[in-house]
Every structure is written in structure tokens, then in C-alpha cells.
Image (cartoon, rainbow, N blue to C red):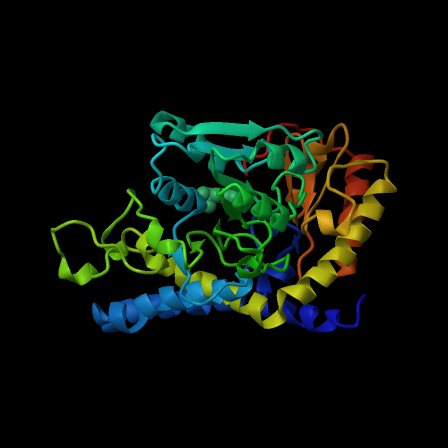
Length: 395
Ligand SMILES: Cc1ncc(COP(=O)(O)O)c(C=O)c1O
């Protein structure tokens, strides 16, 4: 254990759910902080006690304030992040800014992108986008060289995952941004699988657009996703998927031509997910307090430990070995893994199984080494005494 880790583990008392199972599932659902309940209760109290005044006094400021808290984790300026219900909507809002019928119309990403992002961009072909999906060689590493080659003067946007959900392979975001900018293209980084576990410096890297959510490493629950827009780009983007809160003066109810807000709020559309914003705040606060650099140091040590434990059992590891090439998850597989995984979840060792990847297991700042060892011990036990039933996991 690194000397610095005691502080991280001390947060376990703030997460009552950790007493109810072993949570190795931060790539899908981060553990719930106890304070999330308190913040949710605050939302309903304000609704009950203050009625419509809650909007101006609490709810709109809370949405802005969470955007600023997230901005700090992304390494971008306050006021450049707006909150949206999910990543699919964030991608669709960005897609609606572009006219693919004029000149640049190429959208380039890889086949390890998260499916929802692919669905949004694939559908832009109906509006004239030339969608190019670069193939990964091994299904583990991002196909960086092929992607860089495919980014040319016709490329409008490169919407990729920073860390891949299937393997935890990680792009060198700076290389992609550099190449895109050299030919006048933009990069939209989906940082859902990195924000909260891998330090981000999106402003320093020159990233144009970024999105993610609160469900995973941020320990914030569903409904509070976010979209960052580079401040000097924001006024060039005019989303067709829009709404009154994206207007410069929403409460003027102006029926004239759309006048967009001057900042990232032009991307926000209609009424924002306020209850989710309240719940999500608790997790983001813990991440900000601990600092992602420290979370990353512990994550690298524990993912290396887990990798060793798994390799010693002869499993295939489907996550890059190099520290600078992987995020916070270790993925591994062997014949029969899916049934074992299901039994482990039944025994409350929370993780998941994905086809073409295997078990995905993620230590986070609250994970002890003893939990990792207990997980592999349980795995050995299930393999020695396999459960009778088989079938498919649902989430
Ligand atoms: C990289 C990545 N992007 C997006 C999503 C989800 O998108 P949405 O917020 O639209 O459900 C996930 C996982 O749920 C993911 O791992």
C-alpha cells in the first residue's frame, strides 16, 4: 500500500454501501456515497418548502455549480461545462451543430467506441456525414495509428472514447488532438471512463469538446451527464437540437429568431435534470477532495496487482499492460467465465461480464487489497464448485 492511500481508504466510512458487498464496478456504477441521500433529501425539501422560489434560489445555481465542479476534474475553466441527462444526448446536440452537406463531412472514430456514440454518429449519415469507423487490430488497444491516418482535410470531427469501455485501453488524447488540429478537424472526447480515475487536462491538451456522465467513476448515479465546449469555439456552434434554456434570455420567451446563450449553456436545451444533479454532487465532491492524481496512483498499483493475480490463474488479460495505456479496469476472460461471473455477483462481488472482453473488474479509491484478494479467492471457489445454471447477464 502506498503511504498516501490511508486517506483514500478513510473515505470508506462515507460509503455505507461498501459494507454490503465488494464494489469492483466503478466502470459501470460507482459506489453510492451516503451523502447522496442527504442531497436528494435536500432537493425534495426545497421543492416542498420553497415551491417555485427553489428554481432561482437553489436549482439553477446547483446546476451551474455542479458544472463547475466537474470542470475542475476535467481541467477546464469554470462556466465551460453544462449538464445534460446522458452522453447520447450530448453527442446528438453536438451532431446537430454541423451541416454535413457542405465540404467537410467526415466523422472518424474506432470500432471500440461505446455503442451509443456509434449509433448517434452512424445516423448522421442520413444528413450527409461520411462516417469512417477504424478497426482495432486486437480489440484491446485503441487503433491510434490507423485513426491518425484516417483524419484528413475532409474530417470534421473525431468523437472517440478517451478510455475504452471494453478493454480499458487508453488513447493518448494529445496525439489525436494534435493531428486533428493540423488538418482543421475537431475532437470530441468521451471521458466517461477516465474522469474521476485518470487525471485530465483537457484545456491544456486543446480538447475541443468533451462529454461524460456521473454514474461510473464519479460515484454520482444516473441522469447527470455533462458537455464541455472549448470557450473560443462555443460561439461558432449553433445546435439544432436546442431549447429555451439554451437561449440568451430564456425568460423573455422571445418568439423571434433563436439567440443562443454566449457560453456552454447554449448546448443545454430544455429543463435540466435537477434531482440527478443533486444526487451526483456527493460523488464529485469526494473525487475533487481526494484529487484524481492520488486516485490514479492507487488505481495503477491495484490494477497491476489484480493483473498479476489473474495472470497467475492462466486467464487471458484483455487490458493493456502499460500504465500509460490503460484506465482503471482490468478485463480478463477464460472459457466459462460468464457463468462464474454471474455467481460472483450473486455472492455480492459486484463487477460485470461483457462479450469479447470477459470480466471487467475495477478497484477504486475505496477498494482495499483484501477485497481484491477476497474476490479472486471467491472466483477460485466458484471455479472449483461451478453453479448449475447458465444464461446471460442483463446489465
Ligand atoms: C464510454 C461511455 N460512453 C457513454 C456511455 C453511456 O452513455 P449514456 O450516458 O448515453 O447512457 C457509457 C456507459 O454507459 C460509456 O462507457
